[in-house]
Length: 443
Image (cartoon, rainbow, N blue to C red; front, side):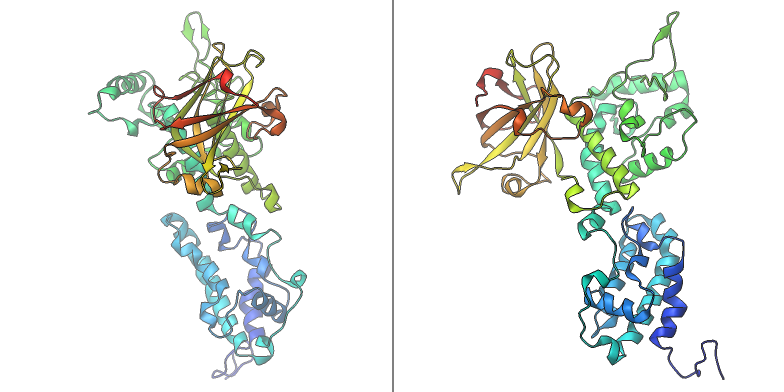
């Protein structure tokens, strides 16, 4: 009896027949592959397929993505299966059918190819002939959803208490005396505007992952004329950034107008974030990075941001700033650790903060710890704290207003003002912030 492919019933399909029947449809499909479950851009299973089955196998084998001795353990199969480890049950179920079909197709084709001695014989095609994504591996890893969520947790979720309690009542604790007033405030708000409106304002959920998912969904359904929570086209015009940096709506005949999500944006909670402080900088950095990841615009490793900021509760205050610092000038402060083994300061900073000069000639900010080679010896990310010791503080003044147009940027040596050393413990409260006088900084 003859079956569709022209084979006898007891014969196995050839690699070519399996490729044409099961792999080529993946290559020709206009639909995205299961890669989108774990990656927001930069990679698709189609990227690893060439027009012929010989070229495709040789290419994958040359890249180490096929194990000729044990086809079932080939790396390309493990990559396809990565979606099974996704903690998002909904995403697993949505992509399960496609993922299983892709896995079975590649597993059957690879097994058949590995039985063909002409295909598995050693060959070394030029890398230019390989089938692979047109982005470096580091860029592909940068687009993983897990990396994006982790970055969101460090840069935005960590700053959520600025929005307490109106946008996150789940943080309220009736047994905490300090929460009694916020609890009353939330109750009054719900009485005034209704439960439904109050529910809509609960932007933050109980985890970073839930929150980001909620924001993305809200950003896809935006009333005409309003800004989305996350603005892919204009990251700095994202509502999640515009709201906390906006003031109360104006009053008309003694009655305050409703808060606006369109120009001019206003915030019923009033000003919660300054456009020059470290939190604003972190929000902008994440939003701009997310927009580039979703847009698939990263082409090279050099374009990727460091993405190594970890929030801490350490506060630094510069008091009595030098007279030559212009009013409201933006200032960045970097912390360098002492390398005992080399008896010198670490070249790379291990923490930084940023803010503008106040009318009282002060600059205050919470430190973001930086993961780097030096930082790994000085602190652990899970502790989010610096040990007692000797540190070098270096100050940079944005007299050229570079940060006005590039708020996520770090100032360079041309902006360096001075430095000083400090000793002792690092506290975790604003009351006991580390204070440094402006005249302590010298070149």
